[in-house]
Image (cartoon, rainbow, N blue to C red; front, side):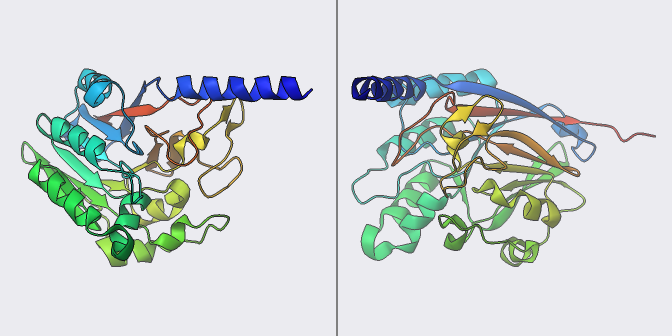
Length: 289
């Protein structure tokens, strides 16, 4: 019996190791009458939760798959780094440098970047140095702010909202009042198509109430292990079979795309859960007469 258990565990380790190296491109098409005509067919690549992982030398395999998506813009949802004293930033910095040479790149923080920022007494200047390098490479870092994307005289709104550390505690999921979002980033752009970057998907309802049209999230790593018919098994906050694990979700006129992410950190487990590049196409949907 013990021998069988050991073989089973070895098989899981081998399968997980193989799964972690199999990049998947997930295609999404999002429709809305608020999408301007000039943005009809606009392509977004959404990347999140790299955690310093590499796919081929200098992440060439990852970059090649991104190029095939032919994006107009790259949006980064955070946790490209690992919040650790020992881990360097070389891998995500080189990836961002290479991508920014070809595409507009907008980068929002995840809980790992914010961990480095909050605890400077532990991590020193790693966060500031990382952000300085991103800026040098032409990456637009966003923290509780909004930028307006312009194309042919038409506009969309892109906002990044940083969740406080209490929203990442294990075993407890506090509520988020939409007014807290407003207090940090202002009101949603009701007259423009509103894209929102928030790392943790637990707060889709609050973000929808705030007024986002498209919410982009990561953090959950697809639930680590995905079971047919049941979905992701566990979130980083130890929610069993979380309501949101991966894929596309809708509340009213709001859509959330939740990526399975590109890497792992402390528990490097993936089963039936390939790392994801999210390729999102925006399509203008005319209002019904």
